[in-house]
Length: 439
Image: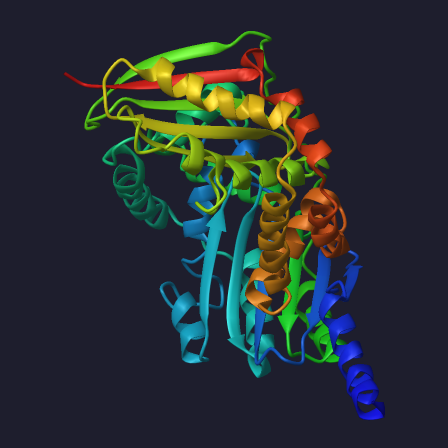
């Protein structure tokens, strides 16, 4: 009996540790020039991520000068005063790492993944990108053609390739979230090198950036080299941010389009939602998972996409939540023409179910478990964690708020789901887009 008790006492701490809320301890501070720094030491990570996230995306562009944020994602790999043109990626690769970047509506992020002992190389590369980029007419002309081809491949020549931006354009102002992140090719053609220089000087400044170093690094040593590479970069002017994003009209907007290349009628029901910083955003993400997550419990899979229905071919739900706006998009395709109302009524039945019926406890727990596991994984992947915490700094104003995400999800109740569904899933809060095949 005593032996069993001893075994249980040995096992109990591990059980408690397994359920302990994961936490990441960050070192955070600002340099005198306004650059915000986040350092995350992870002794179990053999590599280091060094990245700079600028608080500028396509929503910051002028209405007749769109595409600049994405364009700079390309331009800032060209070369610098001390890095020859075309050698940016080679320098990182020769050190055993790789580099990448992305642009969104809200931010532009550049980063390197390197062996931990090469962290100084990552810092030097990012400081060069911020202080000494070389932007030439030749480089701009070359990138214009590359971006045009990218737009053709990713959007224009792809069936329903612009559907996402149809939604955003119908819901939000063109000057902010309502235009394609890649921008207008006419705007890029009309832009001069002075326009590009002005955009860089306005947004790619230390006081509009967050530098992150995550991995197996020595914190005092890292701080010393951050100071060495970044402290003398001049502070920029205060960044003015857009405020007019667009709001629901109070009446359903219905748009019908004839689309080349599609064989089936497609429908998008787009509900105005909340920005990702709103407390209801966690609930909305869970709702999307309940509607079209795992097919063992998904409302759409079990009650809409049934074998007896010969009309509906596909239906799914996603959240599209950004820093200042949000949308909840339900997409569907039909096997039979002119049956969009059948699809819409079937979807609305499930939305009414969310409003009026509690979600089964087992289903809700299954969904919440998925979110808990997903966010726990971030703590064991420095590259993903660095991306997450820099977003939390820029959007929430606090990188450590990332540590509260799991708690936000696991505390969601069926009553929360009903409340959010009743608040947002109404026709007067919706844009409906119907795509008809070209005859």
